Structure formats: structure tokens, C-alpha cells
Length: 183
Image (cartoon, rainbow, N blue to C red):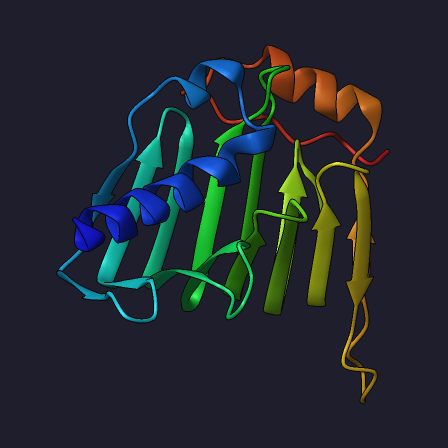
């Protein structure tokens, strides 16, 4: 019975990550493919070893390892995907693609916070933010990006012009977007 509870907690963690995905995604099943998994019942934790692939509707997570657990002494559920890099992609309600990659992608269910650590990139409809750490508060829709502060390491933001984003939105999925002539 306790192992069923831990598996249910793991699946709840993964589905909660889809809080900002298409509504239809939330009604889809969660499918986890992994080479192996272990359940630490005493510590309420499941670890999937990979490559690991998680899908739910348009949401896709790829990682070398995926860990689902509750923080000690709290009822807070946490999902941590690690890889070189771990990746997250989805289609938003408006049909635009969004993706993220980092060495570690951490989602805290209680605070609805997504934290990307290590060579982090967040990309939405061609615009992109990169840095060593990117934290996104889903509820307040606030983003914080940080660099290590050493050497040439900086936070970089690239914003594509509106005409590029409109062209991308209207482009069929199987056709590449043509580059704008900078003249």
C-alpha cells in the first residue's frame, strides 16, 4: 500500500509541472519511460534512471535521471530532472512552443516555482533567456535570471521582433521559418 502511495506522489509531481501547459495536456495520461527505477519508501522518494522520458499531452521532459520526493518535514512535493542537459518542452494555450534546458530542472509544487540550474536556457516563440540560474514563479509570472558573476559569464536575453513571432505562429509545424533579411 505504501509503495502505491509513493508512486501516486511521483505521478502527482509530474502532472503538477504541467500547471502552465495547454488545458488539454492536464487531461492526458502521464507516461514515464526509464531504463530502471527505485522507490525509497521510508523517505517517500522515487528515482527513475535513464535515459528518462516523461510525456503528458504536449509536455515532454528528457533527463538522465528523474527524482520525485517530498521535502523533509514538509508536505511539499518536488520533482528534479538532471541531465547534460535535461530538457522540458510544451505547447502553450496560445499554440506557441516553449522549452527549457539546464543541467538541473527543479519544480516545487507548493510554490509553483521552476528553477533551472547550470547552463540554463528558457525559450518561448524564438525569444530566449540564458544564464547559470533561471527561476520562474508560475503563479506571479516572474522570472529571475542570474549568472555566476565571473569572467564573461552573463545573463543573455534575445527578443525576436513581433513579425518573427507572428510568422512562427502561422508557419506549419513541418516547415522551417525563413530568416528575416537584416537589410
